[in-house]
Image (tube, rainbow, N blue to C red; front, side):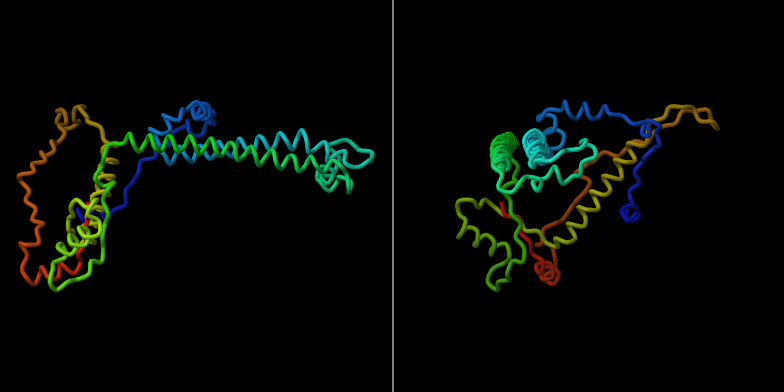
Amino acid sequence: MRRLISEPIKHSDPFRFERLVPSASWIVRAWQATNEEILAAGGVDALVFLRIVVFSIRVFIIAAMICVFLLLPVNYYGQEMQHKQIHSESLEVFTIGNVKEGSKWFWTHCLALYVISCSACVLLHFEYKNITKMRLAHITGSPVNPSHFTVLVRSIPCSQNHSYSKSVEDFFSTYYPASYVSHQMVYRAGRVDKLMKDAEKMYRMLKTIESQTKKSYMPCCLCGKSTHSFEALNNDAESVEIKTSSDELQPSQREKVENFGTSIVL
């Protein structure tokens, strides 16, 4: 088990010819995706990120239209001069520096700034309103999970008169009587965290192996018989005994364990 955990996870990435062929079909599918589909696939954060991208594109389109149809003509004809062909003009004739000093057409630039700013504020207001509604609907529609109302307390001070568990109970019962329900002491939190990480790594490794392997019923070349897949053992909870109570430890061991006290408060 330790050897499997230490080995890196290998992901299968077979070479396929379709990956070398350019395709724009994903753009059409991405454009046709609804908010509900994005929310179900990526969650609220992914949907908010995409809405920010859409908001930026809308502001850019508004600013580009105002600059092309309002500011560029004003800058181009800002001074009385004979213009050449557009493709041979310098970029300076398209900027505000080409407008004659003291010209009355400077108000167009101020108008463009006000229009772009107001448009961005209006779009931002509607985007914020829609995102807030979606987030509230997601929170209210999600099932109640005790982890949403749980806090992790570390570095509990040592008391000579009370145990760690009694200290946590007295503190939260005194200062948070309305929201405090119960607590669970966790000793050697570093070891528990390592076990959880190892279990997650093993799960991802087994999922990768499961996706790569397929059940085979082809006859064997040597014996002419069909292959048989192994049968996993049943997960019998009664066959495993886990002792996590600190009362079963020796006094010397209990003193060492309590030095790493951590509490999960509900």
